[in-house]
Amino acid sequence: MFVDEDLIQRNQDTINFFNADAMFEELSNFVDKYGYKYIFNRDFATEEECIINYCVRSHAVKLAMDACEHYSKAILIKNGYQWDDMKNVGHNLLRAYELFIDDDKDIIKNTVFFKDSPLIDYSAYKSNSTVKLLISDDLRTPKSESVSFEERLSSLSSERILPNIKSRYPGQTLVDYDEKFIIAYATILHELCYKYKTIREFYGDEIAL
Picture 1: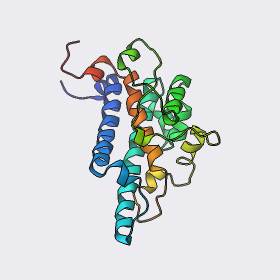
Picture 2: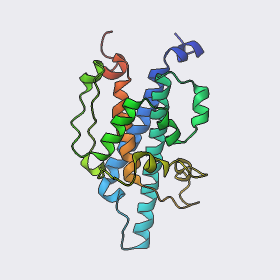
Picture 3: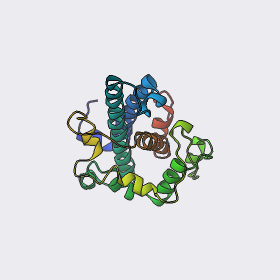
Picture 4: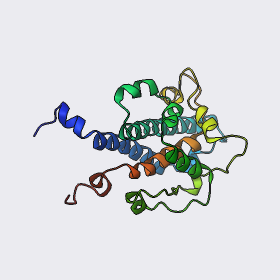
């Protein structure tokens, strides 16, 4: 058997989620290498230390935003959107989020802000139960009554040149975004996608279907 257009079309979900997972794995490895404490620190004693951290932080933003974009589009394709629709979404994470179903929006918003979300129960997804997701306390931020989730995501989606493009060239223009928020969002989308993956994608190819 060889890969052709028909085979690709029949396996869109597997391809899209694999691609997004590969990007998230790259982000996870990068974060493991430097650690949240270092990435989220912006106060250093020397110019060299400050610049090296800036490079690390900018790259973390790039990796996280790329993962967010691909997870978002994988979810939207799974929910019936076409690739032509994705052209209108572009790199804009807020525009993609606005197309999510309401249940997913609620899960995302609750997880970002609440420190008491229970551990994700993957088995519950198979019965279509709604659960909250668990992310590291290092990524959690207090719920804000004055700034909504949409407003925070808008700050990463409303510029003429979007942050996921800017962060590819940190020497050309200042990359100064909320790296904790966007890494948290990538982590949440990674977990949320277990809701949409097929049995083979969930358990791996080693199981018999």
